[in-house]
Amino acid sequence: MPLRAASASPPISIRSNLAEQAYAQLKALIHDFQLLPGDRFSENEMGTRLGVSRTPVREALFRLRNEGFMEVESKAGWYVKPIDFDRLDQLYDLRVLLELASVARLCARENDPPELEALKAAWLVPAAERLTEMREVGALDEQFHATLVRAAGNAEIAKVHWDVTERIRIVRRLDFTREDRIDATYAEHAKILRAVLQRKLDQAQLLLKSHIEQSKSEVRKITLGTLHEARQRARAARR
Image 1 (tube, helix red, strand yellow):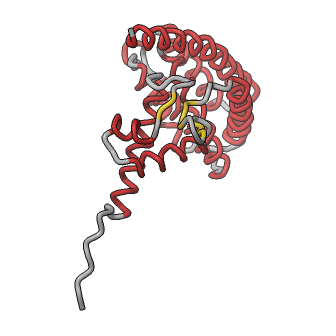
Image 2 (cartoon, one colour):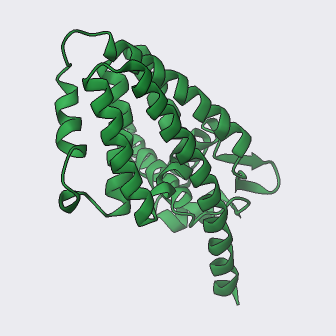
Image 3 (spheres, rainbow, N blue to C red):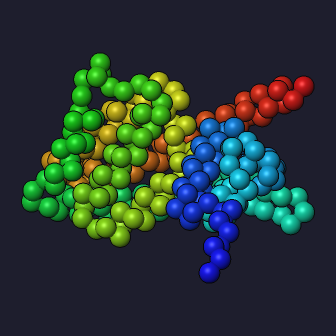
C-alpha cells in the first residue's frame, strides 16, 4: 500500500493554540487602543502583523465578532467596532444586579467563606503596601469583584458575572490610569469588604452600588480622552 503524502496543515492542537494566541494578541491590541474603533484590515494583513497564518487569525476574528468587538464586510474586510456606551451601561447595570445579589447571599451566611481571606490580604493593607501599576491593580480589581460573587456560592451567577467582566474590560481597566482612582478603589473596596464581614447588608450594598456607578462614570470620561489621544498619535505616525 503506498504511503499517504504528509499533510501540509498543522495538527489541530497546534492550530487551536495559534488561534488562541491570535485571539489574545488581538484583544490586547484593542484593549491597549493600538487597534482603534473604525480601524480596518484584511486577514492577511493582520496575520502578517501577528506572525501567524490567515486561518488562526480568521478564527480569532470571528470569536471577537461574537463578543461584539469586531465586524466584517464582504468587500471592505474587518474593522474594529465603535465603543457602544449604551451597551456598556447595560452591562454595568447587569453587573450591579449580580454583585448586589451575591453580597446579599454572603451577608446571610453564618460563617465567612475562605475566599474572603484572600480579599482581606489584598485590600486591607497599609497604603505603603498597595499596588500602583495599572495592569496589576486592574487585574486585582477584577478579582475582588469576581471573588465576592464566587464566594456567594452560585456557580451560574459567577459564570455570567465573569462574562460581563470580559465584555467591559476594554474600558474598565482605564479606571486605574490615574493615581487618585487607584487610591479610591483601595478605600472603597476596604469599606465594602468590612461591611460584608460585619454582615451589614444595607451598607455593603449601598457602598458597592455607589462604587460601581462611580467607576462607570469615570471610565466613560477617561475612555473618551484616551481615544482622542490615541487617534492623535495615529495621525501623527502617518505623517
